[in-house]
Length: 115
Image: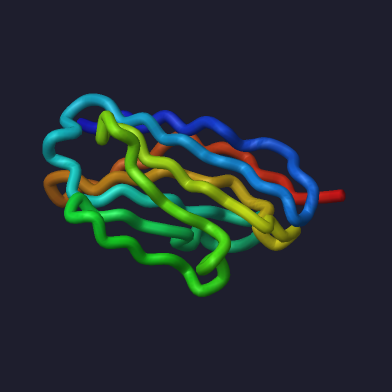
């Protein structure tokens, strides 16, 4: 089992920045991939960014060049640095982890981009 706890969401003006954090606990030795997904009202959950245990990253086209996913020194924490935020980035952001063929989710953190 892997438990995920997100933090760092909030309200920001267009063009602003936020950093989301996700702390993993439990069987973290078995985690192979961690990532961030987001779900806007009335839309399906979509990938924002993913980071493999080998260090490879992948981003949605809509966030490339603005978002950066990284791992903390303790390696049980993953961050999503979001710059130049746009109103269309407004969503609930979920941390995810893949371990032993299972997908785990955090509870989500709200990001609202509005003037």
